[in-house]
Image (cartoon, rainbow, N blue to C red; front, side, top):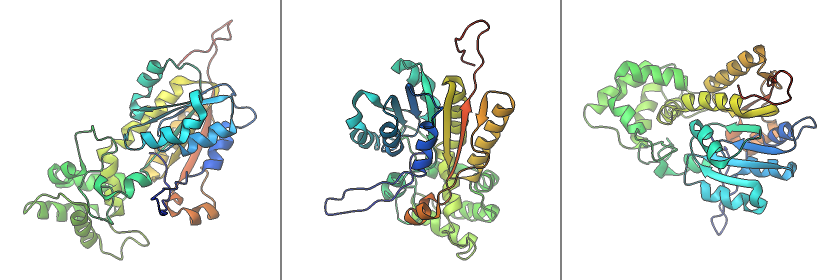
Amino acid sequence: MILIGRERSDGDSARVHVSVLADEVVAVFASPDAPRDGWIVDGTVGVGGHAARVLDACPSLRVLGVDQDPEVLPLAQANLARFGERARVRRGRVSMLDELLDDEGIERVVGWLLDLGASSLQLDRRERGFSFASDGPLDMRMDPDRERTAADIVNTWDENDLADLFYHEGGETRSRKVAHAIVELRRRAPFRRTLALADVVSRAVGRGAAGDIHPATRVFQALRRAVNEEGEELVRGLEAAQRWLVDGGRLVVISFHSGEDGVVKRFLSEADAGGAFRILTKKPLRPSALEARANPRSRSASLRAAVRVRPRLRGSAAEVRG
């Protein structure tokens, strides 16, 4: 979703966040043939790291930063305050971008950025329930207004549905063994805490089976994606980008999951074949070795970019939204 970054605590508990592939994002929006006047929609603004870099590099552009997590919005507002009216920050899900753009009276959208996945502010706060490394409530909601939590899924879905979820959304090859262990144990008591679930998954998977990652990583990822309906949100965000971007507008998507990268790849391939977009990245851009060392959470990031190609009304230069 937002940024994957690192945090550092000094005497005042200040946090430093590093936006993934920031140079590459700026290069797309600041390219010589990109539109110079209009709005960039950052649908997963987080604390505003990418938005600030784009605004610094492109003085004539403005940014509408949107995020579903109310805890990050004050940080984004503070980080983007120096840009004045060039930056607006609003709360909302990616699936609400049509409505938000209408409410803001924004018409000329020249850029669209989606930075998927979870942020450090979410992963590193145990009370949010995203982490298998520290104990917290089994929640995982990016938007606290969502009704369904990870505990609801773990404690109510049947064994086959859990196994399918862990396999398809997390890539967990031992999904059926994990699902069976969860269903057997929840008969005694429901799962409420992250470490209790992580322990069951680790024993089912085997601590040496996941290579260099924690054995519960894939199951927790699958639960987070289901809780936040990340697949559905991504598709609606891509479709909205096609509706709103002007001719020559840029679309940039950063993903951290092979499944969601596949969705982006297929969408752009079909749109390119149909003449709606022209792909800029034949292969996804990946973090450099230097960036991956400095920010290990960036290692799985993939960036894809494309240019909107819009039809023209016959006998007119007016663009149509389609």
